[in-house]
Length: 64
Image: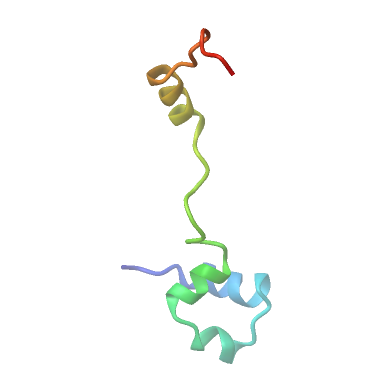
């Protein structure tokens, strides 16, 4: 796996304002979590919503 070190360093030092010793002591998983990655499923894209709506249409005759 290759890392974008310049991008990660920018995110850590400028975005998160981490001091160098804190940045370099993080694991890649910890840095990803701090950057907002891996915090659960991504929002559904419109294409997937359209697919679900086509496969499971609302039943207009159903009582609510």
